Image (cartoon, rainbow, N blue to C red):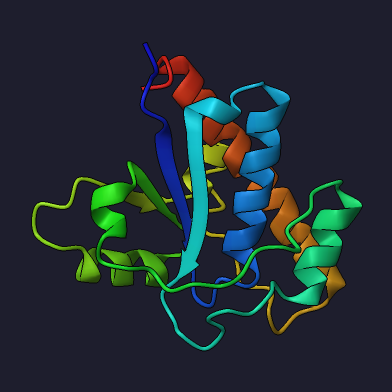
Length: 162
């Protein structure tokens, strides 16, 4: 009997740096474990400046150096139906978490949380926005996403992928 996939949405502000990086990292980790059929993975933004655009070239390059291809991603805005469709919606920072909670329809089924706590690093609660930074900032974003997405996947595995 087929199992319903676990639906995960990663969210940042413009959906061109952090959330597509997290999406790409999580996809790669899921693929490494042979669990592609158990997950539906996407990303979106709370701001509409970049709708339809490819990821920031620096995010694409950081991911490429790590063997992750996010080049086909196109930015999209969080939609009200995302709160009914996804099981987990994970924000990269507190501002986007607050925006998500404010836009969540009453009775939304998605659990909305911050992404970074899954890294198990109490001193790091957010994935800082690298947009105005350097290549090094995008590499740091990738590393944070790897740590958090690894912890997230382990949480799902520990919970029996439910």
